[in-house]
Length: 132
Image (cartoon, rainbow, N blue to C red):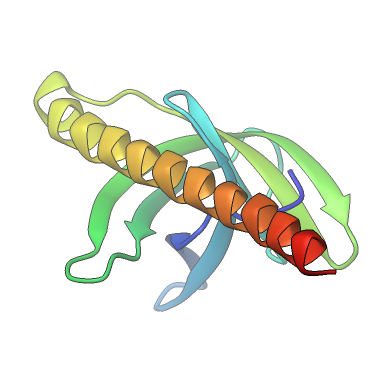
């Protein structure tokens, strides 16, 4: 869990009082069909629920999975930030089908980007060694 997932953020709102809300963006470090791990300086406790908008930055049109409900199951402190394990909460079938498709698409793109990143990093190191 050393690197954030490429081009993927989670956006969520935190209520401060009756009328004020703060929009927070956090990097994701893991994502699968059951949940995710995100890093933020905001404080939550296990048992809290969050509603996330996952946004995959793409060249032409970003992929949005909006309204993903999650339950905070674990918190680990790292410097001035926290890593949170979030378990996705299943919703109504009609909503979850569309959301599930978008989440699946985001996971596929993340996997492809990670594969390309690892090929580039291992390939460039080999090329530099060959030049020496």
